[in-house]
Amino acid sequence: MTRILIPAALAALALPIACGAASAAGPDPAALRARNHAAACTNCHGPEGRPPAGSPIPALAGRPQSELVSQMQAFKAGTRQATVMHQIAKGYSDDQITAIAAWFAAVR
Image (cartoon, rainbow, N blue to C red; front, side):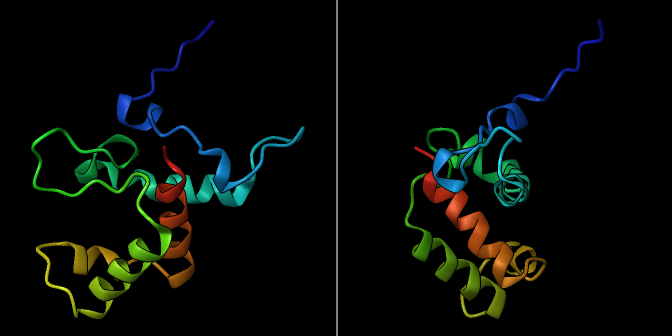
């Protein structure tokens, strides 16, 4: 039997129920895509959007979806100052931003 080791940061990205219901065929593909996009955020914002205590980087977990979307749109438009987020946000479509924000909002 072959064991596959998954990095802790990715293993911690359990799919929140609110992002899509699992069926007999498996998890919702749209929810999986949102989770996969959100995985990129863990490099700075920590597993499941929870950075280490004392980090200057804000937590994303459990924040309102509308707040996260609005901040990402401001980064994308260049109206909110950032070191790298304005560049990162430009790489996502509006639909992807909405899905990522929904995923983090569902993390409890």
